[in-house]
Length: 205
Image 1 (cartoon, rainbow, N blue to C red):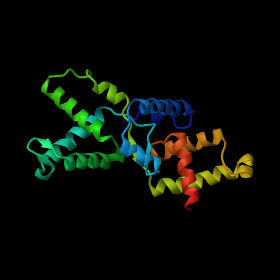
Image 2 (cartoon, rainbow, N blue to C red):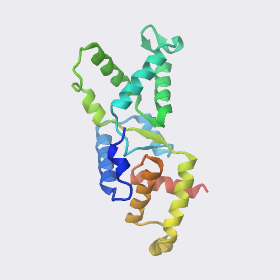
Image 3 (spheres, rainbow, N blue to C red):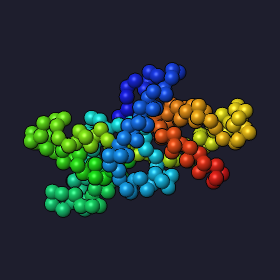
Image 4 (cartoon, helix red, strand yellow):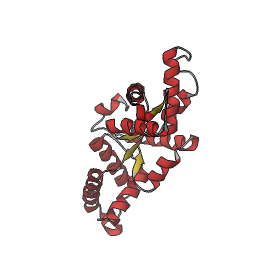
């Protein structure tokens, strides 16, 4: 889920929203991380999205996909998902809009949602609220991202006198690149990840 205000802010300063999302990611990294997903971040396979957060839409999608996976016998043992079933659920969840979420979070959230539906836990109560606040949604890097980054990076560089000399962008120009990425793809990495990806693309062209 992303803020409804996003659709209204094109053409006005967005730095506040980017910085707010980046701060949330930074705080979440000190709270809890998924080793497998973070390893993929370090290898430039995926990025942490500063724009999207967990919300009701994600709860509904997760519950629906969990119900669908549970109906397939190869993914469960009795009334519980096997490891292969949880992995399938994670893949199906990602298949909707490309966002990956920690498997541990998905398991805990399904437990909380199940309890809510049984009336044993009041909505909005329990450890799940803390987990939700710190949930990081990840997104795969795609060739479309890379081509756009390369083209836009070169365009900014050509218009930057200092950039031409150093062959790299300054802070303001990186912020511009990040904000334009946000508008283009409706998803947004942190500036550090954006810089890392641009370096990766430049090395591999």
